[in-house]
Picture 1 (cartoon, rainbow, N blue to C red):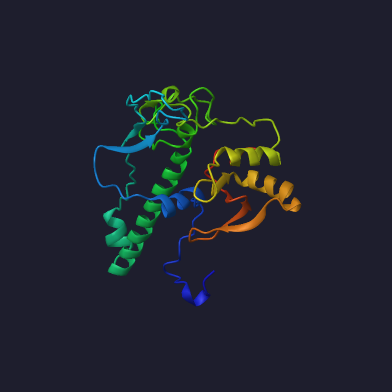
Picture 2: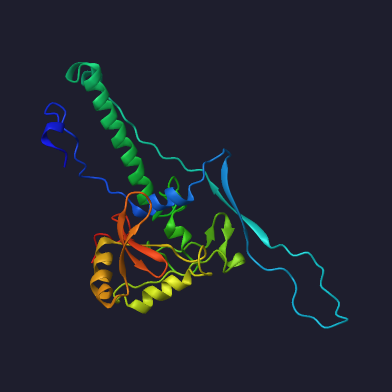
Length: 261
Protein backbone atom coordinates (compact mmCIF):
# COMPACT_ATOMS: atom_id res chain seq x y z
CA UNK A 1 0.00 0.00 0.00
CA UNK A 2 1.46 3.41 -0.93
CA UNK A 3 2.17 6.04 1.70
CA UNK A 4 -0.78 8.30 2.48
CA UNK A 5 1.11 11.32 1.12
CA UNK A 6 1.48 9.59 -2.25
CA UNK A 7 -2.25 9.15 -2.76
CA UNK A 8 -4.12 12.04 -4.34
CA UNK A 9 -7.47 12.70 -2.68
CA UNK A 10 -8.77 14.14 -5.96
CA UNK A 11 -7.72 11.17 -8.12
CA UNK A 12 -7.58 8.06 -5.95
CA UNK A 13 -6.03 4.95 -7.50
CA UNK A 14 -8.42 2.39 -8.89
CA UNK A 15 -8.62 -0.85 -6.93
CA UNK A 16 -8.94 -3.89 -9.20
CA UNK A 17 -11.70 -6.12 -7.79
CA UNK A 18 -12.35 -7.96 -11.06
CA UNK A 19 -9.29 -9.25 -12.90
CA UNK A 20 -6.79 -11.97 -12.04
CA UNK A 21 -3.41 -12.63 -13.60
CA UNK A 22 -3.31 -16.06 -15.23
CA UNK A 23 0.08 -17.72 -14.55
CA UNK A 24 -0.28 -20.01 -17.57
CA UNK A 25 -0.79 -17.22 -20.08
CA UNK A 26 1.90 -15.13 -18.45
CA UNK A 27 4.29 -18.07 -18.71
CA UNK A 28 3.37 -18.63 -22.38
CA UNK A 29 3.88 -14.95 -23.26
CA UNK A 30 7.26 -14.86 -21.54
CA UNK A 31 8.62 -18.10 -22.97
CA UNK A 32 6.81 -19.04 -26.18
CA UNK A 33 5.69 -15.78 -27.75
CA UNK A 34 6.12 -15.49 -31.52
CA UNK A 35 5.44 -12.19 -33.24
CA UNK A 36 2.95 -12.68 -36.07
CA UNK A 37 4.53 -11.77 -39.41
CA UNK A 38 1.29 -11.70 -41.40
CA UNK A 39 -0.85 -14.09 -43.42
CA UNK A 40 -4.37 -15.47 -43.35
CA UNK A 41 -3.52 -18.59 -41.29
CA UNK A 42 -1.15 -19.73 -38.56
CA UNK A 43 0.76 -22.85 -39.63
CA UNK A 44 2.86 -25.39 -37.73
CA UNK A 45 4.86 -28.13 -39.48
CA UNK A 46 5.53 -31.35 -37.58
CA UNK A 47 6.88 -34.90 -38.01
CA UNK A 48 4.27 -37.61 -37.42
CA UNK A 49 6.01 -40.88 -38.37
CA UNK A 50 9.46 -42.41 -38.86
CA UNK A 51 11.42 -43.20 -42.02
CA UNK A 52 11.58 -46.68 -43.59
CA UNK A 53 14.52 -48.67 -42.31
CA UNK A 54 15.94 -51.04 -39.71
CA UNK A 55 18.47 -53.75 -39.21
CA UNK A 56 19.49 -55.87 -42.21
CA UNK A 57 21.64 -58.80 -43.32
CA UNK A 58 24.04 -58.72 -46.26
CA UNK A 59 22.29 -59.05 -49.59
CA UNK A 60 18.99 -57.50 -48.46
CA UNK A 61 17.03 -55.48 -51.00
CA UNK A 62 16.23 -52.14 -49.42
CA UNK A 63 12.84 -50.46 -49.59
CA UNK A 64 13.62 -47.09 -51.18
CA UNK A 65 10.03 -45.92 -51.56
CA UNK A 66 9.58 -42.35 -50.47
CA UNK A 67 7.40 -42.03 -47.38
CA UNK A 68 5.62 -38.89 -46.24
CA UNK A 69 6.67 -38.12 -42.68
CA UNK A 70 5.73 -34.44 -42.34
CA UNK A 71 2.38 -32.66 -42.11
CA UNK A 72 1.11 -29.20 -41.26
CA UNK A 73 -1.38 -27.93 -38.70
CA UNK A 74 -3.28 -24.84 -39.76
CA UNK A 75 -5.47 -22.44 -37.78
CA UNK A 76 -7.44 -19.38 -38.78
CA UNK A 77 -6.28 -16.08 -37.31
CA UNK A 78 -8.49 -15.05 -34.38
CA UNK A 79 -9.00 -11.51 -33.12
CA UNK A 80 -10.02 -9.97 -29.80
CA UNK A 81 -11.14 -6.41 -29.14
CA UNK A 82 -12.37 -4.22 -26.30
CA UNK A 83 -14.07 -0.88 -26.86
CA UNK A 84 -12.97 2.10 -24.75
CA UNK A 85 -15.70 4.76 -25.25
CA UNK A 86 -15.64 8.11 -23.47
CA UNK A 87 -18.41 10.69 -23.40
CA UNK A 88 -17.38 14.26 -24.15
CA UNK A 89 -19.05 15.26 -20.87
CA UNK A 90 -16.58 13.03 -19.02
CA UNK A 91 -13.39 14.43 -20.57
CA UNK A 92 -14.44 18.03 -21.26
CA UNK A 93 -16.71 18.85 -18.31
CA UNK A 94 -16.56 16.45 -15.38
CA UNK A 95 -12.82 15.82 -15.81
CA UNK A 96 -11.92 19.14 -17.36
CA UNK A 97 -8.25 19.83 -17.85
CA UNK A 98 -5.44 17.90 -19.53
CA UNK A 99 -4.27 16.12 -16.37
CA UNK A 100 -7.71 14.91 -15.34
CA UNK A 101 -8.64 13.77 -18.85
CA UNK A 102 -5.34 11.94 -19.31
CA UNK A 103 -5.76 10.10 -16.00
CA UNK A 104 -9.27 9.02 -16.94
CA UNK A 105 -8.17 7.94 -20.42
CA UNK A 106 -5.19 6.00 -19.04
CA UNK A 107 -7.38 4.24 -16.47
CA UNK A 108 -9.90 3.20 -19.12
CA UNK A 109 -7.18 1.99 -21.52
CA UNK A 110 -5.56 -0.01 -18.72
CA UNK A 111 -8.94 -1.58 -18.00
CA UNK A 112 -9.31 -2.37 -21.69
CA UNK A 113 -6.00 -4.23 -21.77
CA UNK A 114 -6.89 -6.11 -18.57
CA UNK A 115 -10.20 -7.12 -20.17
CA UNK A 116 -8.36 -8.35 -23.26
CA UNK A 117 -6.04 -10.39 -21.05
CA UNK A 118 -8.95 -11.88 -19.11
CA UNK A 119 -10.80 -12.81 -22.31
CA UNK A 120 -7.71 -14.53 -23.73
CA UNK A 121 -7.10 -16.35 -20.44
CA UNK A 122 -10.67 -17.65 -20.36
CA UNK A 123 -10.45 -18.70 -24.02
CA UNK A 124 -7.16 -20.53 -23.45
CA UNK A 125 -9.01 -23.27 -21.55
CA UNK A 126 -11.90 -23.53 -24.05
CA UNK A 127 -12.24 -24.35 -27.76
CA UNK A 128 -12.42 -22.38 -30.99
CA UNK A 129 -14.47 -24.58 -33.33
CA UNK A 130 -17.82 -25.46 -31.72
CA UNK A 131 -20.96 -23.42 -32.34
CA UNK A 132 -20.77 -20.14 -30.47
CA UNK A 133 -17.03 -20.48 -29.85
CA UNK A 134 -15.55 -20.00 -33.33
CA UNK A 135 -14.26 -16.46 -32.61
CA UNK A 136 -12.22 -17.82 -29.68
CA UNK A 137 -8.64 -19.02 -29.79
CA UNK A 138 -8.21 -22.79 -30.26
CA UNK A 139 -7.72 -23.53 -26.58
CA UNK A 140 -6.74 -26.44 -24.38
CA UNK A 141 -10.10 -28.23 -24.29
CA UNK A 142 -9.63 -28.74 -28.03
CA UNK A 143 -5.86 -29.23 -28.04
CA UNK A 144 -5.64 -31.77 -25.19
CA UNK A 145 -7.85 -34.48 -26.65
CA UNK A 146 -7.48 -37.79 -28.49
CA UNK A 147 -10.56 -37.78 -30.71
CA UNK A 148 -12.47 -40.34 -28.62
CA UNK A 149 -12.44 -39.29 -24.95
CA UNK A 150 -14.18 -36.13 -23.78
CA UNK A 151 -12.30 -33.05 -22.62
CA UNK A 152 -13.26 -31.16 -19.44
CA UNK A 153 -16.06 -29.41 -21.38
CA UNK A 154 -17.63 -32.81 -22.22
CA UNK A 155 -16.81 -32.43 -25.93
CA UNK A 156 -14.76 -34.71 -28.18
CA UNK A 157 -12.46 -33.19 -30.82
CA UNK A 158 -11.76 -35.58 -33.70
CA UNK A 159 -9.84 -32.94 -35.63
CA UNK A 160 -7.18 -30.43 -34.65
CA UNK A 161 -5.58 -27.75 -36.77
CA UNK A 162 -7.51 -29.01 -39.80
CA UNK A 163 -6.22 -32.59 -39.49
CA UNK A 164 -8.05 -35.76 -38.44
CA UNK A 165 -6.48 -37.05 -35.24
CA UNK A 166 -7.00 -40.73 -36.06
CA UNK A 167 -4.92 -40.36 -39.25
CA UNK A 168 -1.94 -38.95 -37.38
CA UNK A 169 -2.29 -40.83 -34.10
CA UNK A 170 -0.67 -40.63 -31.64
CA UNK A 171 1.28 -37.45 -32.50
CA UNK A 172 -1.77 -35.16 -32.15
CA UNK A 173 -3.31 -36.99 -29.21
CA UNK A 174 -3.38 -36.19 -25.53
CA UNK A 175 -5.57 -38.61 -23.58
CA UNK A 176 -7.96 -36.75 -21.23
CA UNK A 177 -8.31 -38.12 -17.70
CA UNK A 178 -11.64 -37.89 -15.94
CA UNK A 179 -11.10 -37.69 -12.18
CA UNK A 180 -14.59 -36.49 -11.32
CA UNK A 181 -15.69 -38.04 -8.05
CA UNK A 182 -12.27 -39.55 -7.37
CA UNK A 183 -9.38 -38.49 -5.19
CA UNK A 184 -6.15 -37.08 -6.57
CA UNK A 185 -3.35 -39.40 -5.51
CA UNK A 186 0.38 -38.82 -5.83
CA UNK A 187 0.76 -41.52 -8.46
CA UNK A 188 -2.05 -39.91 -10.49
CA UNK A 189 -0.15 -36.62 -10.65
CA UNK A 190 3.16 -38.35 -11.31
CA UNK A 191 1.67 -40.46 -14.11
CA UNK A 192 0.20 -37.34 -15.69
CA UNK A 193 3.59 -35.68 -15.49
CA UNK A 194 5.31 -38.64 -17.11
CA UNK A 195 2.74 -38.61 -19.93
CA UNK A 196 4.44 -35.34 -20.94
CA UNK A 197 7.99 -36.65 -20.50
CA UNK A 198 10.13 -37.16 -23.60
CA UNK A 199 13.58 -36.76 -22.08
CA UNK A 200 15.22 -34.64 -19.41
CA UNK A 201 15.74 -30.94 -19.93
CA UNK A 202 13.70 -29.31 -22.68
CA UNK A 203 11.52 -32.37 -23.26
CA UNK A 204 9.66 -32.63 -19.97
CA UNK A 205 6.85 -30.63 -18.40
CA UNK A 206 7.91 -27.36 -16.79
CA UNK A 207 4.52 -25.99 -15.67
CA UNK A 208 1.42 -27.58 -14.14
CA UNK A 209 -1.82 -25.65 -13.61
CA UNK A 210 -4.68 -26.35 -11.23
CA UNK A 211 -7.49 -24.47 -9.53
CA UNK A 212 -6.93 -22.61 -6.23
CA UNK A 213 -8.85 -25.34 -4.40
CA UNK A 214 -6.89 -28.01 -6.24
CA UNK A 215 -3.66 -26.27 -5.26
CA UNK A 216 -4.72 -26.14 -1.61
CA UNK A 217 -5.75 -29.80 -1.68
CA UNK A 218 -2.47 -30.95 -3.21
CA UNK A 219 -0.43 -28.78 -0.83
CA UNK A 220 -2.17 -30.01 2.31
CA UNK A 221 -2.04 -33.64 1.23
CA UNK A 222 1.45 -33.98 -0.23
CA UNK A 223 3.67 -31.12 0.90
CA UNK A 224 4.03 -32.59 4.41
CA UNK A 225 5.46 -35.71 2.74
CA UNK A 226 8.14 -33.56 1.05
CA UNK A 227 6.80 -34.54 -2.34
CA UNK A 228 6.18 -30.91 -3.26
CA UNK A 229 8.47 -28.00 -2.39
CA UNK A 230 7.63 -24.29 -2.27
CA UNK A 231 8.82 -22.55 -5.40
CA UNK A 232 8.38 -19.41 -7.49
CA UNK A 233 7.48 -19.52 -11.15
CA UNK A 234 10.32 -17.52 -12.66
CA UNK A 235 8.40 -15.52 -15.23
CA UNK A 236 8.96 -12.03 -13.90
CA UNK A 237 6.16 -11.55 -11.37
CA UNK A 238 6.94 -14.35 -8.94
CA UNK A 239 3.78 -16.47 -8.94
CA UNK A 240 3.78 -18.67 -5.86
CA UNK A 241 4.03 -22.33 -6.78
CA UNK A 242 5.23 -25.75 -5.71
CA UNK A 243 8.02 -27.70 -7.35
CA UNK A 244 7.13 -31.17 -8.63
CA UNK A 245 9.79 -33.07 -10.57
CA UNK A 246 10.91 -30.56 -13.22
CA UNK A 247 7.70 -28.49 -13.18
CA UNK A 248 6.21 -25.72 -11.09
CA UNK A 249 2.61 -26.26 -9.99
CA UNK A 250 0.60 -23.01 -9.96
CA UNK A 251 -3.01 -22.03 -9.28
CA UNK A 252 -5.19 -20.02 -11.67
CA UNK A 253 -8.68 -18.59 -11.21
CA UNK A 254 -9.22 -19.12 -14.93
CA UNK A 255 -8.51 -22.85 -14.80
CA UNK A 256 -11.80 -24.78 -15.23
CA UNK A 257 -13.31 -25.79 -11.90
CA UNK A 258 -12.00 -22.84 -9.89
CA UNK A 259 -15.30 -22.50 -8.04
CA UNK A 260 -16.17 -26.19 -7.82
CA UNK A 261 -15.43 -28.55 -4.99
